[in-house]
Length: 135
Image 1 (cartoon, rainbow, N blue to C red):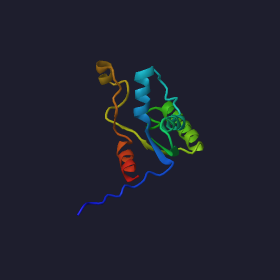
Image 2: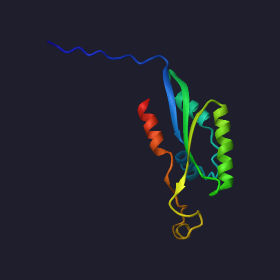
Image 3: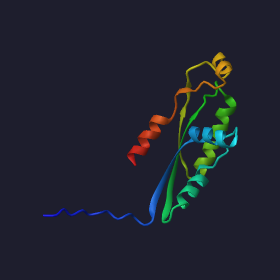
Image 4: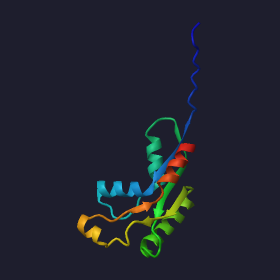
């Protein structure tokens, strides 16, 4: 007796959810193009990616980012607050977490010797991975 396999048909159009890690996107763009400000548009990027394949419909953009606390960087904290409000106004689902750092500040001796900014010890990755796995 043979086996019968039923293949589920792909829905038409295929619904797309885009998951964006804001910090990784920023550093990738910075390395590739030299940008020093996260001036990207996640909705526009997701639409462009979804449009590359036929019969795709962008349903939702989910944006995840860590935000520095005001006592660490008032300017960046205010920048991200405004950017988050603007993204939410366009329908993007935004999830933020306050970043916690392993060193006292960006001008610590480790930055001067390694040339890199000491990073957060915990940011947004665990919630992003959990959310992507549930969809």
